[in-house]
Structures are given as C-alpha cells and as structure tokens.
Image 1: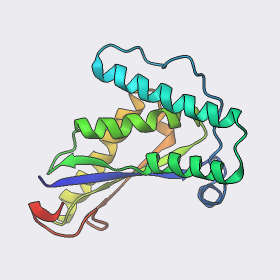
Image 2: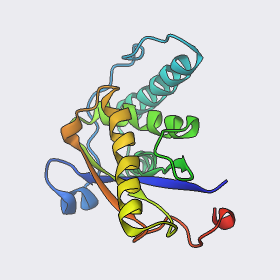
Image 3: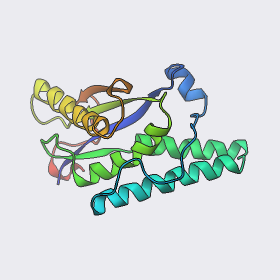
Length: 178
C-alpha cells in the first residue's frame, strides 16, 4: 500500500534553531506517579504505560547523574522519537493507528519539555497537481498538529509546513515505491 509521511523534527528550543542543534535537549523534571490522562480503554492504557516508562527512564537517568556520553545518548534517543515519521494512507490526511502510536510516543517528551517547539512537515509523492499535493501535505501536517494539540500540547509550539512533492519521502511514483 502506498503510504506518505509527515516528518516531525525538532525546530528549536527557546534559544533558536542553531542552538538546538548544538546543545543537548534540556529535560524538565518528570513526575513518576502515573500518566496525565486516565486510561479508558486498551489503547489509552498502552499509551499511559509508554508515557510512564519514558518518564521513569528519564527520571532514573537524572538520578544516576549520567556522564556526557550517556546524556548524549538519551538526547539522541529523544530526538529520534521526535523525528520518527507518521505514515498516511495514499491520498489521505487522516491519522492511522500506526500514526497514533508514533505521535503518542512524542507526547511525554513534548509535555516534559515545555520550551520545545517542533515543525511538522507534510510530504506527498509526485502524482497529482502541484496545488493538490501542496494542500494534501498541509492537511497531513495539520492533522498531526491537531492530534497533538487535542492531547494538551500548545498549538503555538507546533509549526506546520508542506513540502508536498518537493521533498518526497521516497523515490518513485507507484504503489511499489514504499
């Protein structure tokens, strides 16, 4: 099945984009007593468990006074979670189940690091007109932003942009490209 992506990347801490790339991400204190959202079904329980596990690992690393290499590894791990792709079905902008999982993994990091800003970029393949692909990429990025904002992340911390087919996620123009 042909799928498109939205890439999530770290835009900036409060000091700007260049500083974000050179300084490690500062991690605010994380409560280790449960999730901020009540578990109402299996998916919510799984999300809460992932959030607790991530919060516990961050708190444990802080308690152990990590050395520089370990701190860099945690920062790289958190950055990888934020930059993980969110896949969309062909010609669609609705968040899939796999997309929810990827976005849910980002929530504890964004909740913990309230000064962190992100940019969500929407991508498409080259099928369709330039105008259509630009709009589809923007709808995909907006869907991911809405998903995060519906879960408590301030919308003013999330920028969206559409690269449509200008920066495709994969080469090719058919269903086998992905």
